[in-house]
Image (cartoon, rainbow, N blue to C red; front, top):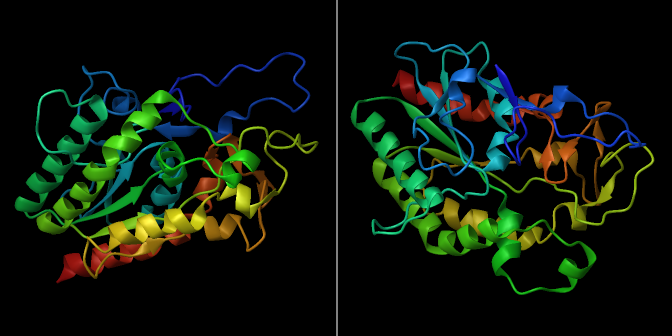
Length: 300
């Protein structure tokens, strides 16, 4: 197994200054994946393999849960793994950081994110044609891409978000390519569930004496632009058909007013925009209905 940092996908934890008063980085909150996956997940290297990462035991002939998305899928890998543990299912994982799932029209000049989306759709189509029982879970950093394309407003002044040029680029490309991906999923006939927005710590949030990112935060800042983002999620869900469901793990971490900095005694966030592996592993119950539906469909 290797531990990966969700932003940089380094195999070592991020460094901290010796005088950092907020405590050491806890390696237990890094996401772990099989070492064999190192060449097939992560960054935008054009030499990468386009295979899924298989997590946990491979069960011949068993139905497969497919987790697809950007680093907000990566942060929930432990949750989906917990939901599939001790069930007769396989878990396949497609991930590229800062890359919302999309399926652009074939043409020259596609970037790595766009190419990756077409490869995922191709893989799903091939597996479906081969008679494989599949169910997809899509998770995406909805607010990052919304923030990149929406005009600045008062919320952006109060709760500035994380952004860089690659996010901006892919946010623009996803405005058409994402809907095309969801139409393709329906056309292929693969039932698909969507994860609703997850909390993040805005840039310049107040210092926290409990530890970095461990204080509770106002929901309006940690789940910024929630109404716009959930509207986007629902519009994509309508492209999928009636069997799709929304998965809401943020409900465990946020109430109507605040989002927690600690959950069951553990720090929620491993960095500014991702939850840690230990907290993620406690959210498996939100994904068990996905596994249940997959198994019921496979028995028909």
